[in-house]
Amino acid sequence: MSQHISIYLTEDHRHCDMLLAQAEELVFEKKFKEAISAIGEFSKAMINHLEREELILFPAFEERTGMVDGPTQVMRMEHDQVRQLVEQLSEAAVTENEKKFFGLSETLLIFVQQHNSKEEQMLYQMADRHLADISAEIVEKMKDI
Amino acid sequence: MNTSSLSLDQGPNISVPFRFFYTAPLFFIFFAIALFFTPVDVIELRFSSQTVSLVHLFTLGVLTLIMFGALFQMLPVLMGVVVGGNIVVVWFIHLLLLFGIPIFSFGLYFEIDTLMLIGAFSIAIGIFVFLLNISIDVYRADRKGKSVPLMQVSIASLWIVLLLGILISLSRTGIIELEYHEALSNFHIVIALFGWAFALIVSVSLSIVPMFYVTPEYTPGCRRVIPFIIIGALVSFAILFFIYPSLSILAEFVITQGVLMYAYQTIKRLRRRRRKIPDVTVSYWHTSMITLLLSVVFWWVGYIEPLFFTLSFISFSIGFLGSLLQGMMYKIIPFLVWFHLSSSGKWDIPTIKEIINEEDMWVQLRLYQLFITLFLLSFLFPSVKIVAASILLVSSISLFINVISGWRVYSSLR
Image (tube, rainbow over all chains, first blue to last red; front, side, top):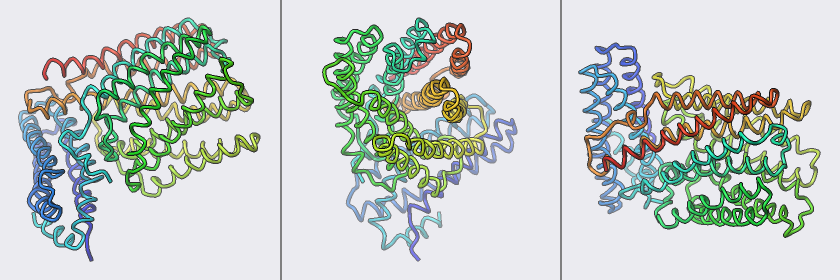
C-alpha cells in the first residue's frame, strides 16, 4: 500500500514540536541535566527530518518536476536557519542560560511553524501528486535516516 | 494551488503588515478619547450618531486595520495566496483607510453629513481595492486547506458588509431612501461580526492554535462541523431575517452553538498545550475566549433585559475580537522583525522574545483586562466609565509604544 509523503513528514513535524516542548518544560522546571538530554534528542530528530527532505525528497521532487531553483531551494535556505538556531539552543541549554534559551526556543518554534506550514500546505501536496507512483519507496528511504 | 507562493521572500515586505499594525493603536487612542467624552446613556442608544461613530472607530480603525495587516502576512503561509506584493497598492489601501476612518467617525459623531460621506467614500474604496486584490486568489485556493473554507466565507461577507455599508451611509445622509434602513443596519452588523470577523478568526485559529502553542490539532470532525455551523447559521440568518424576521432567533440559536463549540474546543486545546511556559499571548487568547462566552450569555439575557444586548456586543467586539487581535499582533510582530533581519543574513540579532519587552506586554494586557471589566460595569455604574476610558487610553498608548519598539529594533539593525 502506498504511503503518503505528506502524512509521514507531517507526523515527523509534530514529533519534533513535541520534543522541543518537552525540553522547554524541563528548562522551565530548571532540570538542566534532563533538559540537555531532551535537547539532544530534539536536535537529532530535527536534523534527521531536514536530511530526510534534503537527501531523499527534494532530489526526487526536483528530478520529477524539473523545478530546481523553486520551492525546494527556498526550503533548503530555511533549513540552514533552523540548523543555526538548533545549535544556539543547545549552547544555551548547556550554559544554563535560561533567558537566552527561551528566546531561542520561541524563535525556533515560530520560525519552524511557518516553515512547516508552507511545506504541509504546498510542497508536500505537490510531492504527493508528482511522486504518487514512488511515494512508498520514498517514505521507506526516509525512514532509514 | 498556487505554487508561485514559495518564492524567495514568501511574505510581503515588512512594511506591508507593519503600516497597519502601528496605525491601529492610534485609532485605539482616538477611541479611548471619544469614549471618555461620551456619556453612557448615549452609548446605550445603539443607533445614535455618537455610538455608531464609536463603533466604527473601533471596528474599522482598530480591528479591520489589524486584520488587514495580519491577512497580508498570513495568507501566503496559511493558504499559499500571494498578496501584498504590490507595495503601491497596499500603500493606497492604507492611506485611504487612514484618511477615511477619522473623517467618517468625526462626521458621524458631530453629525456633519459631508464629512461622513467623504470618509465613507474613502473607506469604501480602500476596502474595495483590498478585496479586489485578494479575492480571486482566496477563491482559487485549495479547499482542502484547514483555513480555506471559512476564509472564503469571511471575504464574501466583507463584500456584503461593504455593499451594505455604502447603502446605509447614503441612506443615513438622505441621498437615497432605504425602506428597511434599520433592518439593513442590523444585517450589516451581524454579517460584519460573524461573517467577516468571527469566520476569519475561526479560520485562522484552526491553523495557528496548534502551530504556535503546540496543542492537539482540532479534530477533522471539529474542523468540518464548526465551519458548517457558521456557514449554515449565516445563510439561515440571511434568509430568515428578510422573510420571517420573527424566526431569526433560530439562526441566533445556531450561531450560539457554533460560538460555544469554537470557544470550548479552543479553551480545551489551550489547556492541553505542550508548551507550559508563561506566554502573554496565551493570556490574550484566554481573555478573548472568556469574553466570547460572556457575550453569548449576555445575548440570551438580553431577551429579558435589553441592556444586555449592548453588553453582548461590547463583550464580543472589544473583549473577544479586541483581545485576540492584540495578542496576535504580539505574536506576529516579533517574528516579522526577527525573520526579516535573519533572512537578510544578519545573525547577531535579538531573539523573538527580546524584540518587545515582555513585562510591558503583560502590563498592557492587565490594563486591557481591567478596561473591559470596568467598561462593562459602567453600564450599571455610569461614573466608572471615565475611569475605564482613562485606563484604555493608557493601555492604547502602551500598545502603540510596544508595537513601535518592535519597528525600532528592526530599523536599528537592518
